[in-house]
Length: 72
Image (cartoon, helix red, strand yellow):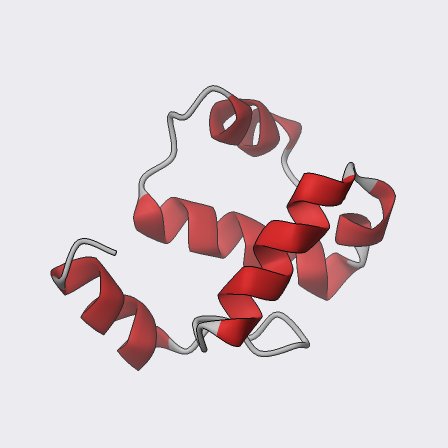
């Protein structure tokens, strides 16, 4: 089960870029993403398409660091 506080913080726009990636990584790895509203799945798919996450939830830290450096 993911940390509910992190989901609430995400909903409130209080997570930074890296914290958001870590949250979605956790949601994908634990399969929780499949039980949340569709926007979570869409966001996870977008992160995979951008190469920030693997389909198993593994974070590509090189791409995350690069994206964060450019304010993406």
